[in-house]
Length: 283
Image (tube, rainbow, N blue to C red):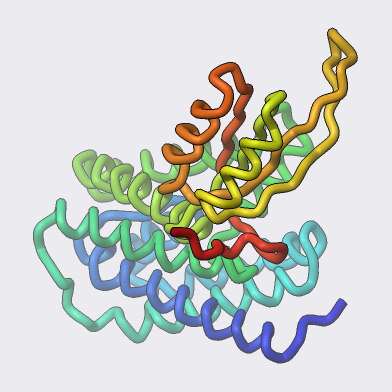
């Protein structure tokens, strides 16, 4: 199914913006202070330092094989979004390279560089692209060996960040690990968003009064799911609703008020779309 022109424009704008933001994190904060990122970008920084060639050239060339892998593994739209994002990133790093570092304080450069870089990468991933081929290679390798994608990515990045110790010194390798951790957390926050939602399942004989309280006092919609106890074979009504994290404490108090023995399971949700999730007015 082809994406609409509106969706296409939206993706292009945010992938462009994300790639430029990542380039700022690299060229204005991390690279001038000899702090590297993980993945293909980290390898590119090391090679650029050793050869004195442009960082953008290595980022683009080393990622080309992963464009073809992404095309076969994940799809055409993802692959073209990725190659577009990488092209913007390569161009932006070249343009920003002459710009002096924002700060010479290594700790500030590490923290803010990782922070900015993570926002850029997360933005690109959220809108269907990728700026580093490490994840794609990890997906391919995971089908051949008994390790998860996350474990493979961690091993690859530890190897790359460790290599920075031989090139830039071991203190820079440790700062690089700190920058990678900050970027990783910011990627997660950017993809999920600050308004993180939670899915709630409640099992109680007082399902009617609990659901009414959620609707009237919390302003959230409720759905009843059919359940059956595996041991007793009793039919149960399961209350399902979606709330934000600020409403969690109030929901627990509402359920406790109506049934102290109620079973409640709460889990994080990365994104909510459609339905009637929008909060109603409450008084």
